[in-house]
Image (cartoon, rainbow, N blue to C red; front, side, top):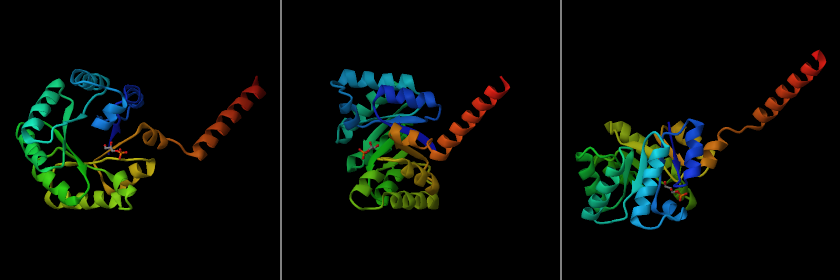
Length: 221
Ligand code: G3P
């Protein structure tokens, strides 16, 4: 499974990249706003800065909600760097924009997916990725992971190449469950990625190994 980090914070992206397990970055307008990036030029420069930190795949979201606006913005974003994936919302004009970019060979990420029907039509429009928001479904007492299972089944039935990018991942169990179900990608916060590493038996076991080693060195010294 590919690991993307879901942030526009350069320090966190750098930290994840240095870990050596990062396959990409996803951003959204809220995450960009959180970093205080204001104005079109600064926003474009921030995407360039992110692209310079990572090896591949940086999702950058359009703000327009009409077809012409999405095409115009998406083309500007795609021209920034080969790593850019144009992120497009799941709305009627978004479907048209997905098809437009797909026909031009520009990668897309269809965002705000909350049903398998939305994932199906995005795949038919040629989306490179679909982003089901599993955490936000869990927030309203709906099973976010069940949606990943439904989309996996539909895509496998017809051999759709669109990749399932589990988004709104909140904790390490979301990542593990997505991997069990067969999500192609997950995007989550650095904290959820780092939490995969920890286990108290590992911590205690390593402490014992190091203590035993230190003791043995004292005896022979
Ligand atoms: O990738 C989508 C994601 O950023 C949404 O996450 O935690 O705001 O629901 P969250």
